[in-house]
Length: 631
Image (cartoon, rainbow, N blue to C red; front, side, top):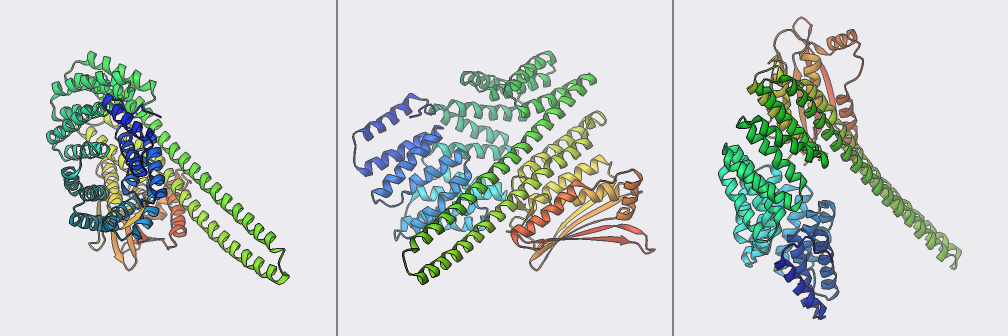
């Protein structure tokens, strides 16, 4: 039995006492209760594998003993899979439990049924249904004075509003959860909630309130003996002080965090603390001291191949040398920053492709195994029928052959559907490096050609855009507001890059619910990129591009219109420069459109129109996308 996660003597004593009770071979109800508490202990103290194993034992015993579905053990099992980042497994656990709870006449089971329905809809991306289920659970559980279920409903609502990007309502529901929950009993969830509340307060600019919340979390973790949690939280506190400009406090907390991180051997935290201490000495103009800590951080980061840490370290070192007037060193570190950043992007891209490939192979093997089992089953039926009458054999054989073919067709169709889904994920993953590398070319060495304020503004927008691109690429379709946010960042960067050579406008129909309606990820950006690169950049004078979305029946019409030189002139310019390649972004997008049509059974179309002025001369290009509504 693995007890490594339970580091404190108190926890070991508690778990040992529970195992002692189990060793006395008590009644089934007592055994189930022991399994429940043991699973909770392991979950709260990072023993996630043990939490899964023990929760399953408790569930099996509860069902075997006829106690009915144990909602608490199921909840612990789902949370343990979540903690292991096995989200598919945790989601698939919920439907069978819902089926069992639906057959119960107990009102308390009905309340928990709504909690788990809300959880399933949330994990499936059906946020409206999830909110309805959690609200229903909250009201019913409140009437029955089921404080645990009410707390879980609030926790679920907070997570849904996080998914919708409504951080105000997310905070409100997290606070209501904390008012109801037993903080000692539900440490795993409480730690997560306090961390998230601190992050929200800091993101809203309420840094002092965020630091106070982090201190509350650090004290709880310290009492529980969770040293790693303490170290992570101190890291957030130190960064908060740095953001406030209170460098002495920040240095004090980073040094304390560094000491704890060395005790527990967390090289990732050690590298982060060293790098941030270097930043503090840099800000104090103690450059030799800063370089000393930067080098220690770089050395530790290389040991664990922490590309993210190496990337921002060299970026900050480059800024320091630029401020010192040592532009050669600034340039060398900027090149290293770009190299590590490219490596980080490539590794993320490779992981995405490997994950998609492994998932495809696994599902393909499962389909082949199912088809083989069907064939074996059909053959067995045929063999068993040989002892009967000839007519009966023929009838039975025909029936099974027909049923087998129908099931085979259904499974093949399901497999093709999954292959299409995975292929779309691969195409979407291809777009990330294409877009990132093009943008990196735009901003390369920009920091050495402009003033510091403009450089910082540019790099900040670029970082936000990269983060959004990576976050969005995880999903086949995203809410329209997420796509528009990324598009606005891209246009702002391009506008800065080309010295305000063009203006732009995005207009969304009021009838479109940008949080509810979804579109395929990065669908619009490649067309906007073409408008700028091939239409507006060759135009003399000020350019203009407009993007509009209107709701029409059962689809959204997205129009991208520019006043550039037109497609024909752009083609002439490309030919004169021997640029006969086709835009990769557009090519991938067209392939994605075909896959989306196949995947969702809908018709997504693209229409190009060459615009003319009163004299019949080219006056720009209009692209119209007919996007079926995805919710």
